[in-house]
Length: 323
Ligand SMILES: Nc1nc2c(c(=O)[nH]1)N[C@H]1C(S)=C(S)[C@@H](COP(=O)(O)O)O[C@H]1N2
Ligand SMILES: [Mo]
Image (spheres, protein in one colour):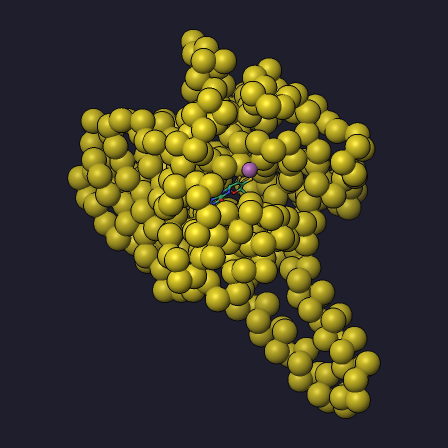
């Protein structure tokens, strides 16, 4: 297999942030199309270089925890988003995050822990070695992507605060700031956006505290500056722009379950055998590859293809009941 056909073998140092080249190309076009002198064009280009270096987030590939599938393009990953705080259309988040302030940022870890603590972004960046992990992502709506995330196992963070024996679940709370988030005016979900995991799910190595993608810090529309990624569950479990993590005894009431408990269960494990009440979950459309609404789809895999790694978390559970 050549390097080209197996994209997961590309080192992060070899990954060129597409947007940089996009920007560069666009700037060159602007420079060429207008009456700008060549030196003016170079000046703009240098600005784009400085910007791309500032956004860079170094990491080491974790090949063992990555899938060997073609990655979804940077363009699709960053322009086809669900982030209801910024609107309900897939294109809304990218358009509406412009004034979203993601630095400085604080995240409080509290609840049933011995050492509650507020971490700022600098603390998170040095808490554990940054890894690149290419994960398959599946939205409950029936589409999927393959995304090279950057971060480390959430367990690194949880261990820092020393969970107490009574802690059984973990609650994740996203920012809710009406001044910055135009979508909060909508009643589709109760705000702030809340998600939850069982403590053993949260401690599983695959559960990623995510700070970047494609070798750069998270774009705002993807949940900057820090989000969760849980690849064997439907996308909505992967809460964005998290400000609080609470260890609790009882199963949290997550926003989607509150909105419609019959349609969105607490577990929300990807499962082709358990349909959503209004549509089948047996197949999916890979964004960028399975073209068109009536085009071909691919089979959805049990636990999104992560059954070998996480299946034991659900041993003996009826997954139709605990959907
Ligand atoms: N706070 C918050 N987190 C969220 C959402 C949201 O609306 N608000 N949408 C979820 C859904 S439905 C999906 S599919 C993923 C999309 O993540 P991505 O845009 O980075 O692909 O984010 C999840 N996390
Ligand atoms: Mo989703």
